[in-house]
Image (cartoon, rainbow, N blue to C red; front, side, top):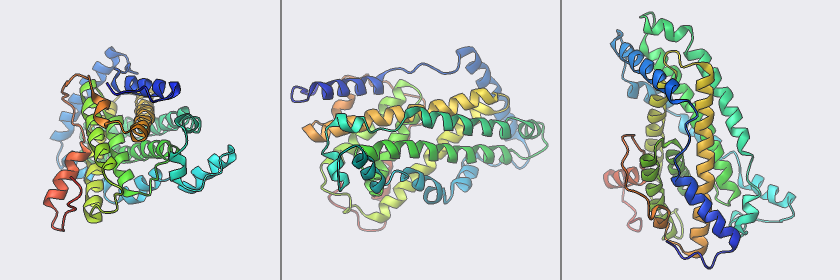
Length: 339
């Protein structure tokens, strides 16, 4: 347990609330009976899709759909809250700041009060989820499963929805991070945001613990370095692309289980909204912990201290693992300081 005695009462409460948020089991938005029935239908439909002539692997289709969308869709969404817009926001509230470093010097309470409205993202995501359900769970799915079209049509449509969902989640994370003073134009901050997305997508406690442990390790590395500019940019670009592709594949697989073939418009809208809402909530908790860890020199490993080492059957996208793999196999000269 870290020594919280130096923190203000507000900071101690924020630390404890954030730890509870990141380790608590989350109430399922869909009743178990409905969820079990939906999963049974999805399993049956998924098997039939794979049996259709010309069916392509999900991974191949997702890779094609997501190709290029990192720079065209996701990164612009992540960077929606620019440094200039954040500084103007604080100026309107009587704090004339000139840099993101100045934002990071503000008390946590001031930054907490400048956070965007959480309900906005959930409502927009619900609309996007409903629109996808209309397109995918209607006649197109029925035709596909009965053999009229190729399975690729369905997987492609769901992959497009996954891209839109990742963009919405990225925008939520970018807004939260920027208002805490972290500039999304910094490639290192982009990588950290990817780790937050992986945490947001974690479904059970075991997956959440694994994703948080990865973020903790990444934060330790960032706190030991004065800047990320020394990191080989070629390696970083490859890491971002790999993480993005794996997150997209993971999300597409989840969405296929949700909406094939008759999960219903309401359920898909609710599940999409829930995913974005979880990401927003966990992003706030993570950036609060990071802010306090940097201010008081707390080891980020404390974020997972005392938690069970429960494993998960879910595929967790580990940003640090991908970074190490890519750095080790890259042909260019690796950065010796990134250890």
